[in-house]
Image (cartoon, rainbow, N blue to C red; front, side, top):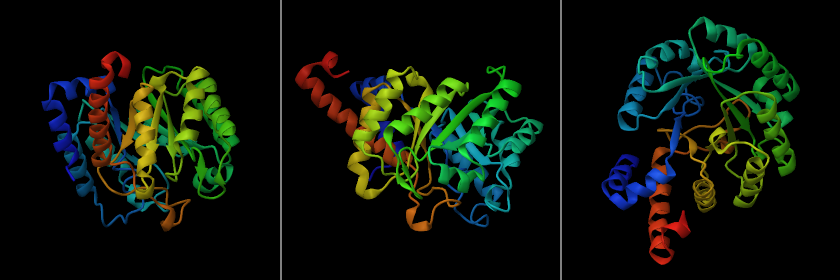
Length: 310
């Protein structure tokens, strides 16, 4: 299997493929140093190791956005104990927006004190998941967001904010969640708070193409701009064909923001047992899917013409 860098190099070397790639215009958000390592031992990833990973990511892919850790209680996830130091180090790379996950209101003030300006927050469409993961209810989380946006984020040009909406549409605790309820919750976060980005997180890697189309189509129909939606996928080998269809559908709908990782790991160990954890969408898998899509695009273009395919 070719590496992501090889695939991308081959795409950009071919004018026709490069044109299609520019139409897709993928905007990637790297989660290697947060979701990618949060299940690992802190002894596996020292601060120096993380700095090397960061440099490798920037050198190989130079993503416009990267998440370098979480201000979670270090007793819960000791591997995140050096997040502030890593943020300070990574922020020297002026071409990339450096994000940190903020799990609670208390940690938001700590983030302000340490000059953090790009914030990831997390909620869920599953009450049970949110209580186990964040130690608060969905309504308490919404109350916190109300305070955040009425008191501290009234100048949105200063800060950049991303909201992970977990369990879209399958929860590891309660199973499948009704699509209309999922849609209602997503629309609430769009209408009530001024997040720059709503990231729909397929926590279990189980959402199917039919449910995905229904939820996403209605998000767009009810006024969420495509530029505000992004996606966080976990990969099940037996579900790869479905994942390809989902990502193809994103390209068709001009949805181009995806979370990716350099590491074949990930998942929320706080709420999920090891057998339910599945790796993040990696650069290799993502660019492999893009390569297949472009080849399919060219074949259709030859049959119907570019205007019929775009």
